[in-house]
Amino acid sequence: MIVPIDLKKQEDLSYEIFIEDLKDLTYERKVAIVTNPTVAGFHLETVKNKIKASELIVIELPDGEQYKTLDSVNEILNQLLENRFNRKSLLIAFGGGVIGDMTGFAASIFQRGIDFVQIPTTLLSMVDASVGGKTGVNNKYGKNLIGVFHQPKAVHIDINFLKTLPSREFGAGVAELIKMAVMFDRDFFSWLEKNDLKEKENLIYAVKRSVELKAEVVSKDEKEQGIRAVLNYGHTFGHVVENETAYKEYLHGEAVGIGMCMANIVGSKLGLFTKEELKRVENLLKKYDIPTSYQIQNPQKFYEAFFLDKKSTDSKIKFIFPNGIGDFLVRDDVEKETIIKVLENFSKEN
Ligand code: NAD
Ligand code: GLY
Image 1: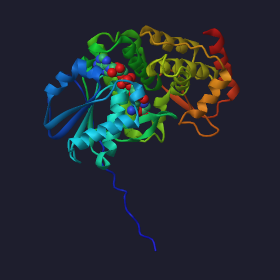
Image 2: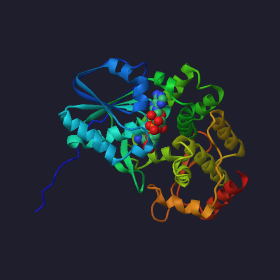
Image 3: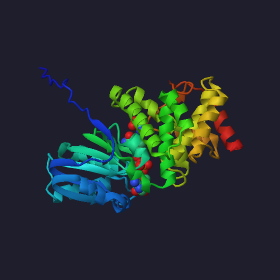
């Protein structure tokens, strides 16, 4: 006997991303703002004044990637239960990508899933982490290994929060913007070369364009079965750099900047990228003090570390290359020797 369960109907997960001065937000339900002391110190009063809810609580978690753990998520869940939150309640992630990823994950598992909203406060979280519903935590085996896709109900991006962001953190966000331009939009890349993101109007335009590009990708491929993997350009190399330096030397976006330069050089060896294009990407990264070089100690070991990446299968490494500026190519057939040669150059020249 066979008993079918018909689950083909898809829930509508659509949502809007508002890029504007934060407006008044009214919720007729219990709301918890999840944040950390750094962000709260600068901006909690501003955000609290904008939110009306039947009950509003604030959950503060310690600041730092090292606290992106199941323990911190458990702390969110405990505070929700202590305050008798229910299935109608709402979480608001107010912070950078660390807070966003953990809040989204807590929302996805609290009473089998409740709504959450993103109010990102770093450039990286505005252009990348707050959009697309990847949520989760790290554990001792690696970064972001535990998590689910859980889309927010809305994303509210207000670049005024960036006034207090340290400049290195700003640069790390710019690296992700540049990533989007190199992969998807040649004109946007040229625009970035000509304009200064320290100007407010320029920054608003760049955030908008980058979010549009990411939204398009996520709309086509929510669960990274295809094109969404292109957003990992620079990450395959960058993750190894982060790992080798124990996550202490480079911010994630900075490691992605280095990773993009490495991917570009391999791409040029494969005839996908010219020397001039290499230089253009490098110069744009340098304009925002994003590192472009890294001393590889042991190319062989660096290569082996690619296999720890959760996007690699047992025997094949999936690389994302630019195919000229504004286009991409995914390859899993690049000869080990080609990659090793590039890595050896990074160990000599830089
Ligand atoms: P972060 O959240 O650690 O924030 C960086 C630092 O800036 C922190 O110390 C934070 O307290 C501080 N900060 C935040 N807003 C501030 C403000 N307005 N003024 C002053 N200081 C402020 O780091 P991040 O770069 O925002 O995010 C990185 C995390 O995002 C990583 O855990 C990464 O895995 C994740 N991520 C997720 C996705 C996704 O799709 N879900 C995408 C990219 C990155
Ligand atoms: N940061 C990559 C993604 O959202 O898929």
